[in-house]
Structure formats: C-alpha cells, structure tokens
Image 1 (spheres, rainbow, N blue to C red):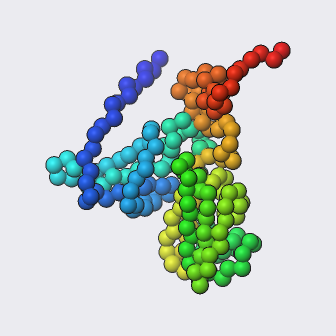
Image 2: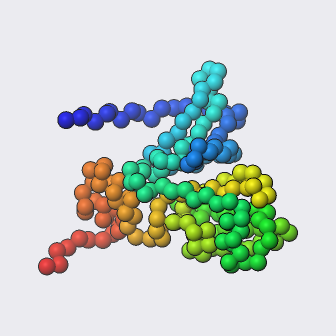
Image 3: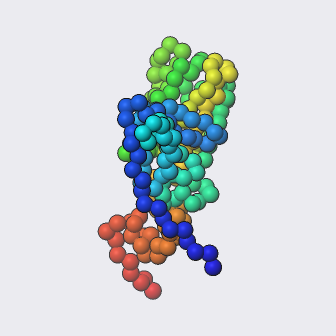
Length: 201
C-alpha cells in the first residue's frame, strides 16, 4: 500500500515592490499583473533572486484551482476564439464592427458579474449574469481571459473553472471533498448550511 506523502508546511517568501507578478493559464500563457489574490490551496511558483528575495512570483491557474475541486477532470476549461469567431458571436446580440476592448468585473468568488464590450468608437455594450456566458459560449461565469495579437490576427483565450450556475451543490467540489475523505453528511452540510438531515422513509 502506497503511503501518503507528508504535507509540507507553508513556506514564507520575501517579496517587495520590485517583484514581478504573473498568472499562468492553460496553453502555456503568462499574464503580468499588478497584484495577486491567491485562494487557500492554490499553487504559487517563484524564482528567487539575491538575498532570497523573490524576483518572479507566478500563480498557477490551471490545473490546480480551488483546493476543493482541483482533482476533478472537468474542473478547469479553456475556450479560444479568433477575432472573427468572437465578432460573429457578439454580432448576434449587438451591431458591432470591431472589438476595441473587453472589460470584466469579478465578485469576491471570482465570478464575472459584469462585462463591458467597447467597439471601434469606444461605445460600450454591457452584459450581466447568465447573458455573459451565453454570449461567449462559456461553461461558467468563473473565468478570466487574455488576448494576443492585433486586428484580425488577434486571438482571445478564456479560461475558467466549474460548469454551472454557482448556486447549490458543486459537483466538482463534492468530488474533491470525497477524495479528501469527507463523508456524505459533511459534504451536504458544507453546501447547504443550517440544514438538518433526517430519514424520510
């Protein structure tokens, strides 16, 4: 029987204003950011410089995700579009000729609650809630994105986790909790707080 590897204690790292921060996303892409918000259990890689100070800190978005659902094969996903393909989707809802930019607003759980698309004249088109994922043909509203290239050569890469509406029991989360040794009643009480399990037959 294979013994479990002992979990290492969290390590302290020294960062300062000169540390370069980035996130790693599916497909081998990296995006520089001004700050990192790292959920407990996520993986952080770093490269040390002089005097053990961190020169680069990289938050790995995939496949390590949130600790409860990171083990599930469907937990993380990526959707990539060419400029023309994304324009085709957007034009089904709004009369836009070119995409100038896309801006999103996340809530505290990482869910995109508002998305603003600006056209070639910087006129804005705002989408909220389920309309966002429906417009972009995404599995969930928990996502981020990057773009590379310009004009018709530009490509858009959307990456996220989960596959649902964000209300109720998360199948991927329950899967991860079960692997971690949680019992069925612990899992149910985690997602449905202040409830009592009874026998109905």
